[in-house]
Length: 539
Image (cartoon, rainbow, N blue to C red; front, side, top):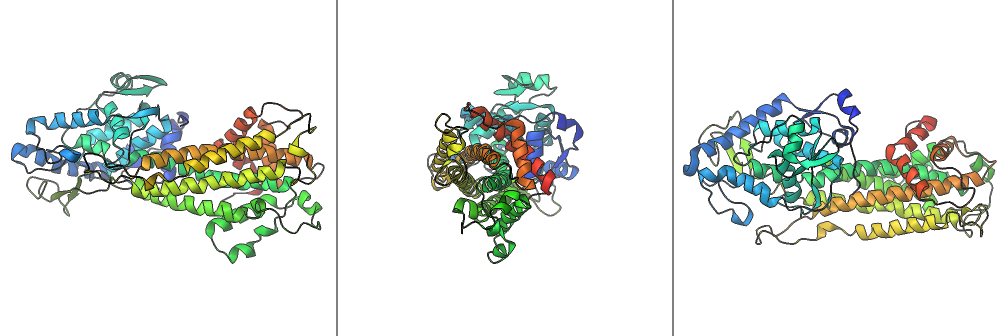
């Protein structure tokens, strides 16, 4: 997983994001990647305090209280084991420690920050029974730059993302490790350097911190934001390829889109029409004998558009999840209830219900679909690269776009690299959500594997970005070979953006730096910004 670091400069200039109110995936990205500060809204503070009073009522009753899962019982298969009143705080601490079993590479800073936002958001919704002190500490981890070390592997995505969230919770109690100012250190030291103190967990708080889908949702949400941007980058790369291959824009006619009204298809076709308007290259072959272009050119609206629609649906699912309560048990206050003493499973006017909102199946299915949809952008992109480099398909272009074919290999192996990425994506697109391995002595007998869905999607996105980068530098070379004919304004702007970071290939050179530079052009948004300056806003 590629580490990513938020831009600290944004933190001082952006207004705080108020947790406890509805969040969008863009809000989450602002905090995770751009360092936007957070604050707890007043109504969230009141909700959290009221739900906490329900838990305190149970704790105050001591051993006379009824058995309530997660407060005075064991966990999972040990749910029927009653815990004595004097052991309740130790129970929560032991839960966090025992569940911190993560393995593999560490998550990047942006992914960890997204997890913290989501964990705080759940508590702020007021059904977790967690003290406002814990909520405030989560917010201050974000605002002061303390980043818990969280290994990327170890969750099966039901009972929540237990292992990754336990590593987050470890930092709150001053255990485990965290990064501060770029250095990895014991969490207690990191908290101290940031002017914070670890917290002792009270009844239910350890369980509330590790129960939920915040790992898979955090990774998935950031990946979906990237996927949406890649849909537009694919339109741009495809337009540059179309110009280099002297293709036609007629298949993107708005009338064709109206009679098959998939929204993503219409958006892609609209982008392509804007990108290709006023092309001198296209005008030069208006009367050529070619009847139809290859599918990889002609069917861009249908393929890119289907990806757009799938990504949009997955984003809707994750937006719901971002604003959902996913821990267990869940505290419900009666209308006007304040969670005083008495009541069924809680305080007067409060009820605790054990359920399965922590199960990651909705997220897992959405992210598996998103991986398949995103991979198609690379599948069709690689086919356009083949059109560009294959002398049997690229009329008027040199074989492999080489300056002197034979002496130079040109972009021959760039296409091979793209094919490798496409093949890897096909393996990664096997859905994790169709698998389930029972855990906790059979109590947790169906799990979502949503964490694996999220990790796979993140890798697919990286591969797609690299594939599109290969297409961009290859297509730019093809446009160069069409001189003195000039491309459309949109393609010219994309070509100029590429040429600012990747020079024309005059002789063979290692292309890995060029691919990386073009990938960063896509990742940073600079490619789309350059094109939009020439043609207006793309969708």
